[in-house]
Length: 371
Image: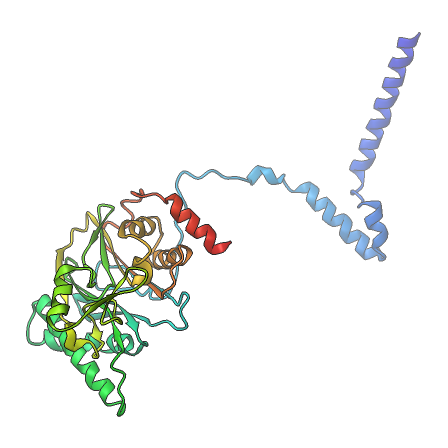
């Protein structure tokens, strides 16, 4: 008897459920009663009901969510400061980022110019005692190079003469400003000339390095002109200058200049500080050479060349790379102006694996900066 009652009850429930289903299918779904009460107008209730019906007709969201890609998405190049196209050479673009850091003003400058159909200039200048010397060099350096190219084609000789000439021109410039010229103003200068897409010549005074990434490894193209170098220190001492060391163990010429070669700094030029550059020439191999990095010591003073190269290798384009390297230097705690200029070559993007890893000390510096 009990089983018969249960069967009858079950059949009755199925009939009721079937009728309810047919009734709901014959009319549109009504909105939530509490929400419907908030809709005062008949038109509002109709719009809400129509929206609910459209939601029922649309496929489930998970049907098209999470598409798997066979290859990574390649985004268009970011437009950043200095991301200008160099159309007549194989160098597609360059990137430059410059930030003030903890200083009151940014005394760094950079310059990129096309001097001829097959010749490009890339340069960074790190001013001290003010931005006047760096600004003067960024504006006029290309003029001296082009003038010297009219008389000879050897890029090393052209760069050497241009450094000495712009040093003299800057002296005339500041002496024309008044009776008390700022003889303490100066700048580093690292200038790279790229000719015929393969001949790279880099000249420098001061401590703004140039680094070439070849097969994923950093190769330094410059050496800092510091009183720590025995040959540089001997020249200063032979000219009557002195080397003083501060409490942090850093040497200074006559207690005021941290470098032994520069543009400007005429107060210490009689004591062995010169504007004669050291020059390096490289034959580029575009199957191996990835890019060139020029920086000021706000970056190089806290990051090694391989660290910078490992960061650049992972970036999409030179503009992004220069910005991330500069930001990383600030993250590591640099107090100086920070400028990075990146020039890509044929092997850009070919070597992406990092050869170094962040040390525990780096992590601690970064965490202390933002704590």
